[in-house]
Length: 356
Image (cartoon, rainbow, N blue to C red; front, top):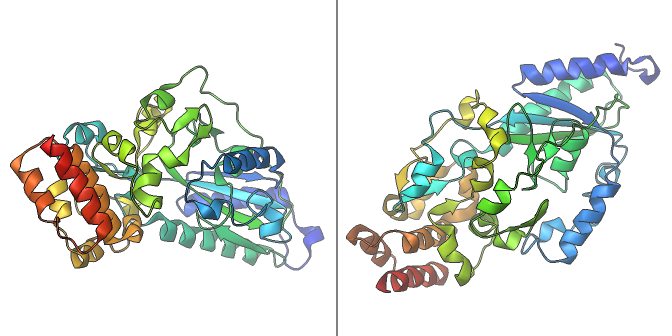
């Protein structure tokens, strides 16, 4: 490989080298795609027109930059998509946690450190290696941080296929992984998409607690528990609260029932290891955290960004769905006069629910 002359670059060899570097940096899969997302663009526009994005205003704020990579990063010719497993090996069985209504269920991707920082750092290192090999390299790295259609790009790059729950699926590793991308201006050889392997299975649709998966490949975010507990900043719709159970941050049900996740592998990344016992902790204990404790224990966690007020709102709903006992009632009563009207509203709902 020679720096300084793009006409002398062997892009097939460079693609092979990129894969090797990516695996050295801890990524489990790498794929390369072109930038044509025209087919997916129509689906995105329809989804937005139906209002299924709810308060996810950022999904509509960037025009066609999300579906046209070269508008987001001028000069982009290819997108490198990468996958990194996150399932923590020591976490308690999710179904067992959800079966105990006084325990808190937190989506398994959020039990360790914030994946944004981990992936961004690794992607930046990979980009530096490419830049060191080809001086003409120009690009930008992303990990759930800009208007990027990451699932569609990963599908085109052959990393997996889109499941009926709209997440990316693989035969070898299920769906317990993060995705990251590098937009770049080099004409690397592209990979072929995989065949889909969902068949007639509809388990993810059937299991959704709030029926957020309207139909195969169609998700109404406004009903999704991940949206309700993370993205929605105001009051959770009353009719959806009883359906949320003890899920206080995210929801994994559609992944837990997926047959392909029986092949999933746990992460080898220390940063994604379980922290503070969040895989199996009582709702009352978490509800007792003041803001200082919340910030201290969740610093460096993806959960940190929702803030203490939203954290208490979510737990109040879960306590309202818990089995009626003295501990649950005492926990709720401890926040009856909380300074936040949002927290007070959800506490009052929970207490009224227990009052029958």
